[in-house]
Length: 122
Length: 106
Image 1 (spheres, each protein chain N blue to C red):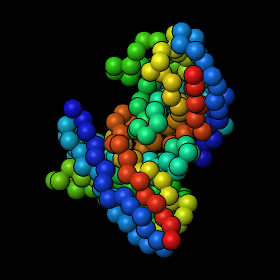
Image 2: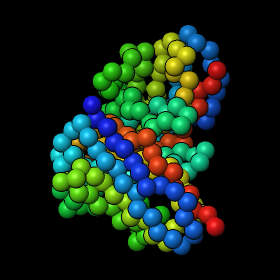
Image 3: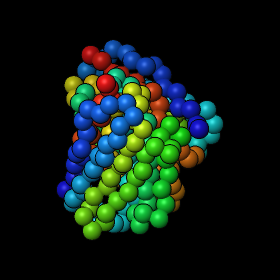
């Protein structure tokens, strides 16, 4: 059974940093690209970042470019999102999602984790 | 970025109803369109991809149609477990973008 388990969320002050993780199981992690998608409280879904299966390609939404960094450790079946210079508007549930292979960087997501809440507030 | 507009944003329905949700893209996305269902406090669940292909395990009362800029998600006979928020997502143009969601309420 495919499982994605996020961790690392919490309360952080504006301007602070935080790293969230996503541990994958039930599939060959190194075969799949992964993404982070976030959802602000009461709002819709927003794609945040993408990383290819071999970590040779990474992409970011304009809203987080230069502040967030996606990475992965295929030996540990774990995806990461390092966030810095956090702002109140970054407050959201962050989901990791498995990218369905579709021959493109922009694909859809067949499995999602349960999410981890990041709250940016003083 | 491609803007995805869903309508309505919310509506009330009853079990057994036939329900249709619309998603419009600001530019053509061929059939690179997915639909997700999200229940409160839960992660989104993939229902449909390629505009009309049902994901494994999704009940056949769900169906999708459309191409280009206009898409629909139809639930033929609404069940109690279908009350949720539904999102469309285009993946034809980078970056992938989602619609604002349609909440189906009792």
